[in-house]
Length: 332
Image 1 (cartoon, rainbow, N blue to C red):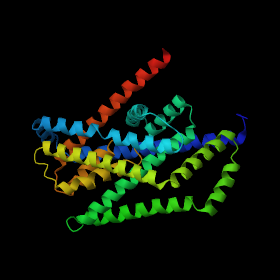
Image 2: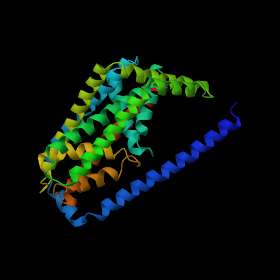
Image 3: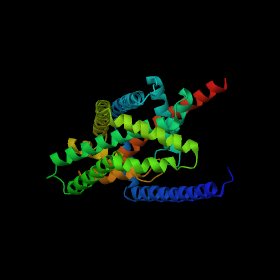
Image 4: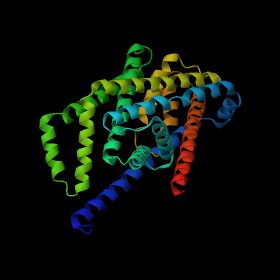
């Protein structure tokens, strides 16, 4: 069965598509990094760094660390709803390990896959089911980020002309996501989808597809739990926004208005979904571009992006340690 021509042909096509997508990600990442580097003056950047208020940066970092708590609760809540009970400590641990793999795998959200695989193996749960709970959790976070952007743009629409484009784009994306959701749960579409799943050549694929559909149906049928997950997503975003505002205070002459942060931070979260290697370049260039709308100079925004990158690397390093310790524990 492993030598079946159809299966081999599908595997070959999948490999070619993966290589092509990897090239696209590298292109976006290098392009963003090149643009980021070309917009800043090194001497001014160094001057900004030498005048940083490190105590305020440290406080911003401590606030930022707490963002992992609502994220972990959100995933644990959705997973439990779908029959995949995991402990809070496991949720935090695997979440942080996932961040490590996000930082170094040549994928956009490869860490989420690693998180799902680790949890599936640890508890013996269906991989397809666990990965779908992660998808729902991430999807909830995306919806909340879009909602924050839309509300913030509506409140400050008259201040900056770019907000009109941002608002239109956010509303279109929100409408598309809502449309896809409605179509997916339409009975007619589901009949066609079930026929396609039934015709899948490999039994494991059919079982995985069934698990995916089951998890999505459970989540669709429990709006209160999903609303709770949305509230946790909102708390997560607010923590990151507050941390960002505090860090901006530490940077000399940053000068952005308070309402810049509920717009820029969710926009960076959404922009990181673009094809890239771990979001590198996209986030940093995004800070320069988006904060530039509020009169922040390139070097100040670049310093902000560099510190956010260090915060991200701290989580990544912690994830690496947890992963290695977990491996040693299993070997022992």
